[in-house]
Length: 264
Length: 211
Image (cartoon, chains in turn blue, green):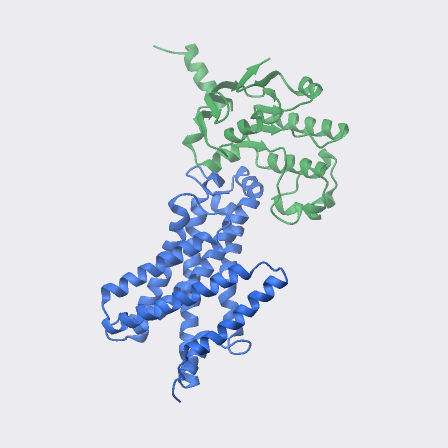
């Protein structure tokens, strides 16, 4: 089976469906047509750009450029985590906790995979390193954003309950332990759900892509499994790191709940 | 030979008695305050709402940042970990908070429910089903369960009818009798002030003054 290449006309046809949706949104006064069109336009520009960048990168295979792109991806993902917080930490912490947790989990899982499991030569071969890191970042980003948002929002809402426990002599981490547990769980639910539904309810995007590109289905399934396991562990580790440092930051050295460290 | 000088006697007394002492102490919105509440003494505090009464109590319990230092006998709050200090300081906020579903889950043993006019069955009720008065009386029992050495009470009888108000006052003063805990008691009720207080403080502007 050969790859059927898409012409600009094919894409324009698909895009006209989005236009139709925007028109409907305008007629029905849903108010999302603007956002929808901007998002569609953004995705088109970003993906075509990254297509060019990857083409260049694959041809050069220069570790410096690959490293730079990885850092750029991380910093954008860090920004994305921050902007999804209803009550984020003030100052550098707002960016730092999310970005650092993502760095720790995504980069370490990606490196282990490249060094131990896939072992391409050289290990930073961009055809493997970049998509792998991208998928890890994209998913840990969701998990970390959800769990951090849950942590800070619940701490804000349950201020009285936390302080009531502090007053009875509980230490800070005891007083916030159930909130921390719930926050962590909320970050892990999406990947657990997608693992449980994989293959029955949905065919995961990466596997679909490989099949469309001509891979044998079983090979595609094996790659998908690998990626899912990596995503699950990366998301788990990243959310744990974020929740751990976030719940430390919520209290000071005298174990006072410091909600003034969150923006309103 | 220095034997039995008055200085030595006072020092010994200070070590034994759980006296509350504030030195140049202030929550960030009030002027610095020096205050001593002796063992077994009850000082009442009043002031317009928003004047900083609760902030003062919160700061003494070390829930908020503050200036100055708080002492219990010869030990400063900073000398011990915050949870240990808070176990010694029984601060009762104006509104009680509960984090488990059932009332009984907040108690380690069986509290003296009948003393405050509460039925035994209340421990099996969901907290959400209790009236504010019931919750407030339970909060008093919960606070006293940790055997605090000082009491900071923020309108402990605000939601109670006259009968239960007297029961709560009696129970708190009884606790004070056997523990000789100093009490700082926020109240708006002039009669309650007369009944429980030995000295009275008021907040005027940013200052705490004795009346």
